[in-house]
Every structure is written in C-alpha cells, then in structure tokens.
Length: 373
Image 1 (tube, rainbow, N blue to C red):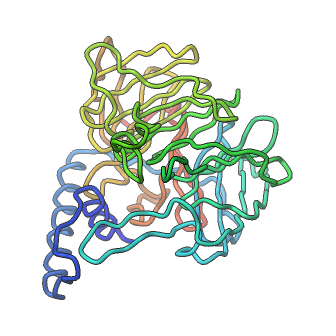
Image 2: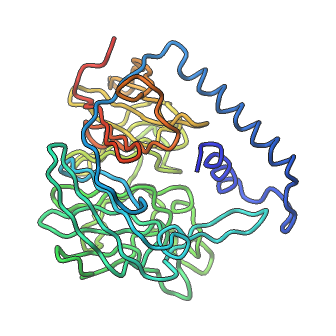
C-alpha cells in the first residue's frame, strides 16, 4: 500500500462515512481525489524538509528470505523483532470488514488460526527463531518476555454479551500458549520491559470506546487512560493520569520504553511525558504533530519520527528543558547512499535506535551519536 492509499484509509477510518452506502465513486472522482492527496503530500513534504538536513542511515544486516511481514518491533534488549507468516492475510492476521462507502474496521480475531515465525535479531548477527502455531488474534503485536517466551497482543478486542474478548496471549519458550487476558480494544503499541512489565498505548477508539465498549449497557473502555502498564499475567499496575497543566490522552501516537520508563507523545496537544519505573511523571510541552515513533537519547534529546501527509521519514530532534522542549533541527532519513527512502520503508524506534526496514535491508541510526551539523 502506497502513501496515498494509506492516507485515504486513515481519513476514512478516522472520519467515518463520507458517502451513501452502496454508492461507489466514479473513476474520475477517484482519480481526482488521488491527485488532491498526491498534491497535499508533495506540498507537506516540501514545507517540512525546507532547509532540513539529510541523515543517512547505516546498514546493519541483510535479512534472510522470509514470509509476509506481520509485525515489526523492538524488544527490551534492542533486539529487532520480525514476525512473518505464509497464511492468507484476509482470513488471518490482516482481516478487515469492508463496507463500500463506509469505514473499514479490522477484525479482532482471525477467521482461522495461523502460524507465525518470529525472528529476534541483534546487530551483531545473533538470532533467535520461534514458530508459534494457532495464533487466534488479528493485527498482532509480538514482544519477547524476559526469561523466555513471548506475548502476542491483538490490536482489537470486542465486548459482547457480557464477555470481553481475550486478545493478549502468553506464549512459552516452546511456542505453546500458556495464558491469556483482555488488554482492551484499540491498541496502538505494545512494549515489554526487561522486568516483564507490559506498556500498552491506545488509539482513540480504545480510549473513547468502540466494539461494544463504552455503551450505556457495557463497561467503559479498558484503554480509557490512553496508556496502561500491565503485568505479564494481566494485572493493571498503572493507568496514565496527565500531570497538572496537561490534557489527557486522546490517542497515543508514539511510545518508547527505556528500562522501566515509558515515554509517550500523544494527541491532541502532542506533549512528551515520561513515566518512570515508580510511575512518577514528568512532562514537556512539545507540539510536534503526528510522530508515530520516538527515539530517546542519553543526553536529554528526543527524536520524533513521522508526521501527517506522508512524512514517514521526518525526524525532528528536540532538547528537553524545564517544562518544555527546544526544537533543535529537522532531518530527512535517507538511504546510506543519500537516496530517499522508498515509501514502503518501515520505521520503528525504541530507546536510542531508529530502525528502518527496506525490503530485506536493516538500516538504523544510533541516536546517541552526533547528528550532522
């Protein structure tokens, strides 16, 4: 899916119905809309990167041939986590309910269970490989647990007829399911710590309610706080409460867990908040809109990656001050040879590393390093 298609899908998903059911747009209407989106993206990129620097990524490894990508993330030990599958996407990990002229909603569970191969990869080439069979959730997040095993969390969970759907599944080191719990609906990100805590950020439907949550006859959404810390067996250890002077979370955009501390940047004012291992918070005004992933440097810098209108390769570096951030500079992430990243590049950051997957090439930038002047 290219950026025009992604932007159109996001607009439809966020804004709801735009046409009468059953009425399909004419080909010229679709072409005109695509051209408008293309023009919006080009203008946004031109403005965002005006006067910016280009930041070449460093090559790490060429990955082995794998199945279709199901999940890309980073573990508590800086391991790149890549989950792939040979299953039919529409019936398993990527299923959606499509209604012409209306919003498209992802499945909460798979139509049929499927297998995933989970590759854990360190920069020195060391790997771990696990095959997990019988995965029941759609749109999964995968994280390794300390001491072995993994946690698989589906992005959606329905509440229906008095029962909450189980969408968090604990997996043993042998690849067998050994427990489950409901982690709530509308999950945006999942990151496990070295101590086994599970930080989960929620997007707007998980905060305000959908899929049966938040009605007069049903419980409020589990993710209403926008950010929750769970234990590995499903106990809620902490729910986010904004520091004085800051708004609550409407949509958790970017999450970066470092040690036992969680850093989050969220809609609508886009502050940056750090929740430490004792669940004490500190917040900074920021206002850099639309970042989908975040790097945290050891020297009081943060890097916010992404943005609206196709700015998937934008890196905004900000220095943390007393209550606010000082916008330092904007960079465009590029290939090692200086060429633009392709539009289908996958970018994911956690802690000091910004990781990019381009086909089978793993590229990254160490945010602890000096940035080009």
